[in-house]
Length: 422
Image 1: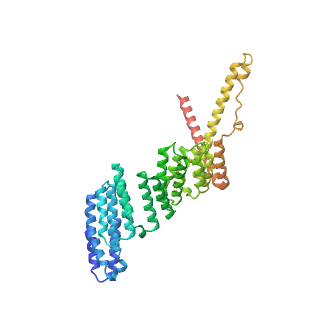
Image 2: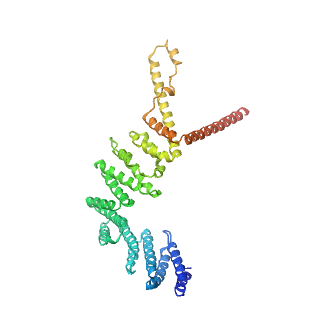
Image 3: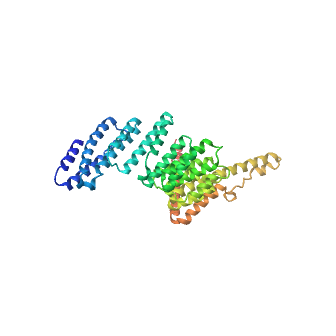
């Protein structure tokens, strides 16, 4: 297949109809771009395929370097550079870091490489050095990686690319213990491009690691800053891969102090984060809502419930009735215990009259716990914003209960009938 496609490229570029031949060539190059190895593939086979393609990319580069083809000058260069970068990426994922660095070095043999390809090449090179440092626990690779970034002339790159370079530099400086310089690099990254997700995420991960390793000796301001960075990273995107940063936020809440500094930070900075990102973590948010200081998450759950009422109302309703039943059982047990203690101290003449007294415990006499109050507020807000939807949901629950009771009654009747027949 590759041989047939390469023959079509050569034959097409030698024909007089250049427009048709260029269209076919672009289609084949696009096919080669999409036909790439995955991590599970054998690289020995794909290495030969990429070497084969490089020869034909060189032919395309020579053809497009003619004066009459100035509009397609970067066509072959870009295709060749992307092939080299992707093969280096797959090699790195195979833990073949030496092959990755050797492959990426071939990019210097291509003239006039586009800036975007140079950026991807340096990023893969940095990741390769980081992987080598994590395996060998040697800081020499990190120094080499820092030198590679320092040698890069950043004036040719866009602000977003430059910001990512500074973020990677901050991550590397943090790993060798240069905390102050790392914070300066992260700060420069977010100042260059304030919506740079990777810069906020790397900064948050650095401060999270610094906070958790030093806890409880570390001040809460570091944890607060880590939560702010993670929320800023989630604020810029609405993709599932950024939901993991919300998981880090919820995990950091377990380190909260008595003043609820971390919960207050979430309550202050959650605005702007797409509510869809919170949906997988609604059960965890409700668990936190039931704990002390959970009222700080009440506004967050109300905002999520405005767009996704069913995802919030059902779990909240379930937890509300669960807490209500548990609280009622605790109160009943305490009343029975008090009655038993009282009964043990009275004389025999009054024993018969007090033994028939009930505890007098009803739902109206119960006093709602703070958790139940917070749950009821969330549900009340849902009823005000989405009255029709909530009414429909309650109808569904009633129908399910009726169906369940009907089935249970039938099972009991069948069991008694069978027992009586025996």
